[in-house]
Length: 451
Image (cartoon, rainbow, N blue to C red; front, side, top):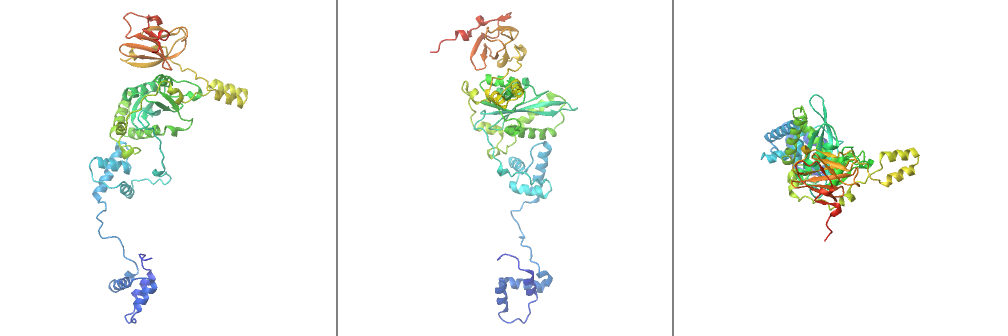
């Protein structure tokens, strides 16, 4: 080829070229071996001045000057930034280092150049088995509040005591909506972190969780407290298939980022200290750290602000979008005992209503703020006990799950479909211990006729 180095055999022949060679021999030699006369005389001159051995190997083609080469000062700054991010518990790859240096106004180079620098300095562990980033195909909902993901992960406090961290994330913007440190993965704390998110960001259209008992065991024919609460607000509750954690991949990725950060923090001695650390992490994650899955690697808060939030679902629409109930454990056992696959399939296809969760009929006043809502279940006497007052709901509402909603002027009891059962003045009059439907300002029996 034209630009290929000259073969060493040809170089040796040129170095030994006789002084008394006939006229035209050089031209014939160059034509035969497809080299230029200029190359011939350069090799011959080098052999005469530096010796035949020096002429046998081609010289380096590397330029003497490289104006665009990265200087050592920029390389050292990039390495220092990587180490600082790593020490603080945040991602410290080429993309993260590039964005942080650019955000701080520091001179930087391209992401690929940073990758080469880190590889040259021995800071990168080769992982050829990893899929290339270009092969990733991610899905996200089109607007904030279209779907939230909720999951819990185990954590260890100082002294080896185990606890659980609930993390609630918006699917569209990757915003960390709310986090909660709890003793165990239980229904009450799942509702608590969900209410915390609603107070902060409004009501979502959907809630995606796994099939855990505290989150959404609807596929096993069981209604959890969280699902009852969310459905009472008109929120669709959906789950991934069992043993498919990739459905909640965004939440799993958030767990990974959190654990990297927590490893660089002092061990929390109790839940209060851990909760304080979670609050610091959420603020930094949402507002200070660009997310690589978002356009222009903006922060989750910027992604949230860039698009209007989705409006709540229409009344009753949550039923169509929610994961349908599966057969209860008792029905599955019956099908297995019968020894008939056909019976088991029929029971699975029946989609019978889920068994109610173990909800309380009592709501203490110290758990009630100025306004809010809570899911309760009427006791066998068809009563609820709210803020120390016994409320009788009528003969047909024994063991029924209802949603209690209150504000500074009224308290309403609603069915899980959003229909009004009864409405009372709130706070209750001083000294009142018992209320029935006849004390209600509005109730389902005397609702005004539609106009």
